[in-house]
Amino acid sequence: MPCDPDLADTAVFCEAYGINPADSANAILVAGKPRADEPQPFALCLVLATHRLDVNGIVRRRLGTRKASFANADQTRSLTGMEIGGVTPFGLPEPVPIWIDAAVMGRDEVVIGGGSRDRKLRLPPEGLLVLPGAEVVEDLARPVDPD
Image 1 (cartoon, rainbow, N blue to C red):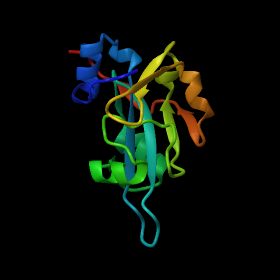
Image 2 (image 1 turned 90 degrees about the horizontal axis):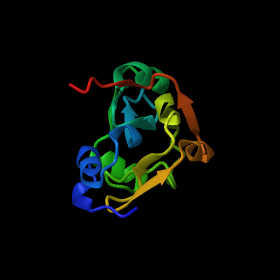
Image 3 (image 1 turned 30 degrees about the vertical axis):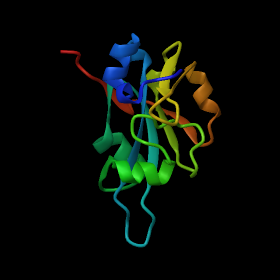
């Protein structure tokens, strides 16, 4: 679905296009602190807009590192070829693991980034399972209190 690039950030997008935030999933690239003489580990996490990614808990442990954080814009662009606000798990140029929060799978459809800030994809979450390296992860994210 086409999207005004100025409205691509999740909260603004959902409001402008009438999308329930519970049906919108963010694709977030995370980075672990590399160990000596090892490459920096990355993973792409898909979480509902109504949830907060557990970066310092389950993400850090799954990356096998002492520290984990959101990848910055330069890292995201370099690794995926995409801008933050448009990242999609489809067509990743590198073999990056894709971790899908189990809550995403409970939706009938989800809206995700379409590879650039000017488009989004709407699909049943089961369509994400065909991606290489895709894995459903329980409690990858926690619901955010709406207040």
